[in-house]
Image (cartoon, rainbow over all chains, first blue to last red):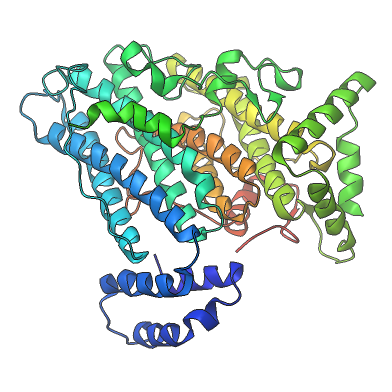
Length: 276
Length: 235
């Protein structure tokens, strides 16, 4: 993320930002100009204090931080899950391709954790610390780290939850371009993960597609039903999608074509059993 | 008033029942989205600037422009997957072909949704140019599908910040994750494990986003109809 770009973007929605930040902006431009050798990793923090001084009185910053802290908790959950799974000797990851895919996903989740922590710090807040987890969900998935299929099922559940969780928070970031775009860019990566994990389960015999059909759990069952409830919606903005335009769009396709959001409360109800 | 006339032409359905439905759908949609008069005013404002001598279809200003932008991309995708499904010797396995039929129906659903939602503000049907695609080559089909899906993901990701109405933002979010599911599948069909490789995901674990101008510059290879950027929110 280029800091000068961020300032330019803010300028588009807040014409006064230059005045608010002017002296510091000049300083940063001087530092990052041609030949400038300042450590770029230090800049988010400098930027954070600038934002806090410029916008500290507005409630919007705290709303953004709330969203980011919530996202960070979910990313901690995913990052820890894949880290434990990939390093486990008991999960039984069967192929090098599967191991490579899970490692890729693990690395993305770790990157999301670091990115969110940096961004929260940049906004002048302290990132929440990593919670302790119980990936059996208090006994619901007792074989999560000893049965590969259970592991993949929980992985699918986490990714599909992540997609719905970010989607549900996007509206709270409206107007903060840089953070909204970053959140959207994480959101679609989670969807890519979900797609791949569903294909991994399909290859193991599960009756599942890369996309979510109605509120179907893909054979995982009632333990994850709450993650899929609401996905059966086939009317978008008062427009009925099944058979739309007089075309043969089935009810299944109509529900698959749109992923639905979850509220923060719904997400917390889903993930709380995974907190120790 | 070029734009206005064009949309009038498109929005005239075959019979009065359809016209009534289209009007009702549009009215309820605008009411749902809380746009109403504001959205119409934006289109009207767009018309006033039509004295410029640049050519091409105007997508409109504000959220209407972004919705038409999405409608244009969904038209492109739907046309592509429809042609794939209609080509008998496309080289896809039966399992792959079934997934492609699913994707076709998703894209048609997206296209028709935007058309219905935009009502009389919708642009017309775009003419596509698929001359660079070999529809009897699995490789060509998959490579094009990958390009379209990754482009679609980056387009929605990049358009989010330009949307003013929170309900439209949510709708874009509902669609982009489905496009990302498609993109991951297509990539894995080309080479298993490339669902989110470093060509689309950076070291922060972030997907690509592109501005409308960047996206349309790429998409125009496949769209004969010229699309004007005038009035469209961009950065």
